[in-house]
Image 1 (cartoon, rainbow, N blue to C red):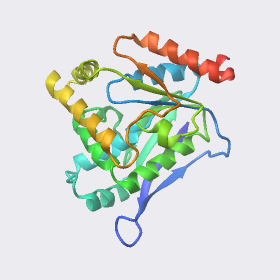
Image 2 (tube, rainbow, N blue to C red):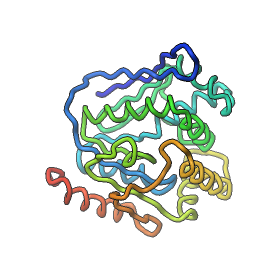
Image 3 (cartoon, rainbow, N blue to C red):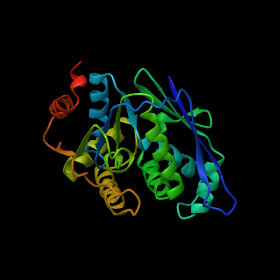
Image 4 (cartoon, helix red, strand yellow):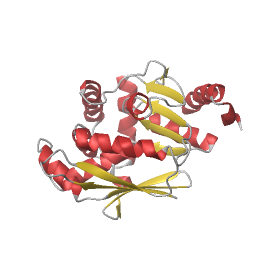
Length: 255
C-alpha cells in the first residue's frame, strides 16, 4: 500500500508558507506515466480506471487532492476570497491519499471523505483552492513523487502539461458541452445530488472557463497529446483507441 500525507508548515510572513509532503517507501526509480487531461465530463475517470486495470498500473485522480482541500474549506465555511484563511486552515488539516490494489481513498484528519468529493459545491471550492500557488505547487510535487513508486495512469487537467510534461503517453479527452453536462447530471443523480440538468451544465461551462483562463496551470491540450472527442464514442471504443496508442509507444505494455 502507498500512503502520502499532506500537511503544512507555515513560514513567518504569511502566504509564503508551503505545505510539507511526507512520503513512505520512496525510491529513486521513475516509472511509466500515462497522462490523461480534459475538462469535466469528458470521461477521464472512467477510461483512466479501465486503462490502469488493463495495464496493471496504479490509477490516480489528481483532482481528488484539490477536492479534499476544497471540502475542508467548504465544511469550515471559509470564504473563497480569503486566501490567507484558506492557507492557515490547510496548514493544520492533514490530507491523506492511500492506494491499495489499484483503488484509492482520500482521508481528511483521519476521516475517509472519498465519497463526499464529487459534488458541484466541492468542485467549486476545489477550483478556488487550486488558484493558490502554495497549494498547487505542493500538490504537484506530491503527484510527481508518486511516479517513483509505481507505473501510473493519472488523470486531471494539467498532467501532461505541468505535472508530467515528460509523460510516456499523453491524451486529451473532450466532448460537447451537451454530452458532458448530461454525463455529469447522471452522476449527480446517482449521488442523489439535487441539481437540474440546466444547473449542472451551467456549472460545467463555468468550470471550463475558470480552468482555461486561470493564470496557474491552465487547462489546454499539450501539443504531443492525442486528442479524442468522446461525444459519440462508447467507453469501450475510447479505451481501445487509447490502449492501441499506449502499446505502440510502450512495448512492455503489451505484456
